[in-house]
Length: 55
Image (cartoon, rainbow, N blue to C red; front, side, top):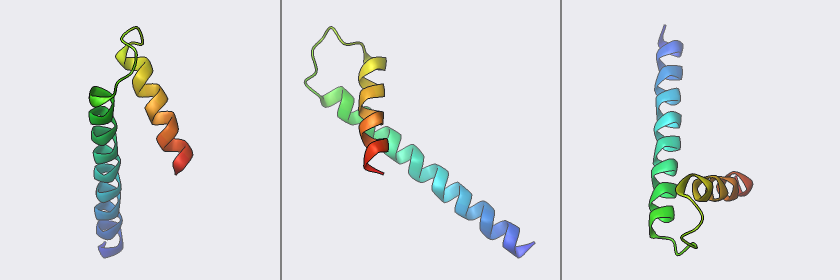
């Protein structure tokens, strides 16, 4: 039981860390100077791809 609780805590920390990374990405996108023609979704995909490559 204790091992399962520790695993759940670790999973929640990992999920929260991923959430914070996505929030940071979204902030970078909103502050970025990309060309206006590129839609937000496409800009998010580009930035997310860069982050995944760095990991």
